[in-house]
Length: 484
Image 1 (tube, rainbow, N blue to C red):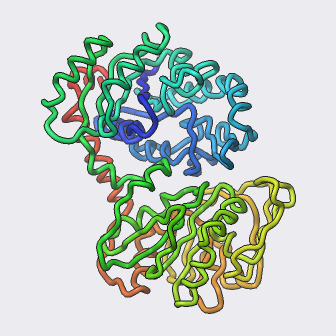
Image 2: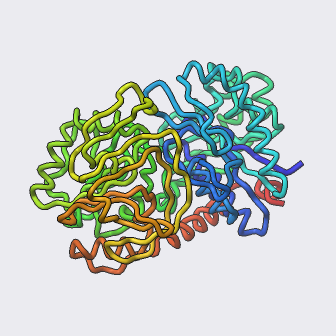
Image 3: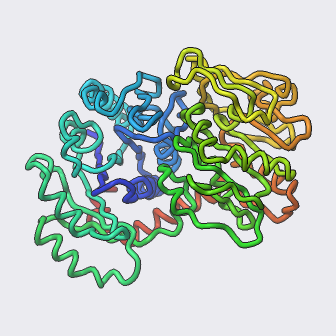
């Protein structure tokens, strides 16, 4: 059997995604054929895998770290939340159905066969598979039928390394508590643990390590410091939007309203990485800043529902004031659909509301349809004649007068729309800000003429730096056994 290890967390957002990516890059740099795997993911940040279906963008990043093409089998079950209680279910890259949270618990055992099949496919030509859990095995109320953590680990026979986040506090209690409440079978799967996000002098935690060992008997495989390079990697979970720092004072201000079901928000990462850009994520209860030069409406998993919330926040009035002041607007995917006159959903694909007026800034309208557009694309900006590389992942078609002025061409066909005055633009292409040439021309149009970073190379460099850091702090004997 292919060697495999699974990283599970004492809670959500403990840094498993970055650790898996870093270990994948470390193994790849040492010549191993390594593959990432996540049985079940819940995220509206989706990617189009190289073999054509949807996966979480975290697994796309991890495949990049492993230096291999991405595959739908790296993330066989993807849950895309559409409401507070329900999600769309993607299985092996394709839409499988929808379910509310309680109903999904009953469905999980039916999905285990697909998870194990994908795991076998991923591991077939690999030296090592590094698996990422979801949430925490300590959520024992979810253990029956589990496919994301111990349910998978026990069925697949994959040993587990538990990850605790010391930055949020209570790491000793979280590790010891997890040990206490797990069943004997699940507890027996844990080979050891890693402390993540440590700041300061590691020796100050020696007594903590002694205490954890005394209560659990588990070995510590390393204390990982706060990885500064990880901040240059795309984030998976929208919870990170609550913690992003502001840019430089006096920089070009770009505002992004944080919609309840915001999707593919890592589209904005290349802008955030520019030192002369202040990317402001506007939360519920806040106003769109009046001094923003550009407002970007991001993607959404539920366009009509998020547009209704946009209005409840009063952001529609803020946006109109922004436009009257001469400000510019870019809408991506769901944000593009919101900019039109009308959004129609005759089949109720997104919910009970079958149509709603749009913001009216583009002379277009959108009709939702059951066929999902899903593809990686080579494109070109018509505004700046700059090459683009991105992907499409959306329901619906958009038509209207302003589509006669397409914002991009995707694989040679027109896409998107530009208003008559050129200040409002929309497109279905995710990833356009990742084009260094496009981003440079866009920022030049606002008077920023500085040298632009090579964004893709900055991600590659960050992955290498994370890998090197892990190699220096993780237990050498454990790494030797893991990597061979």
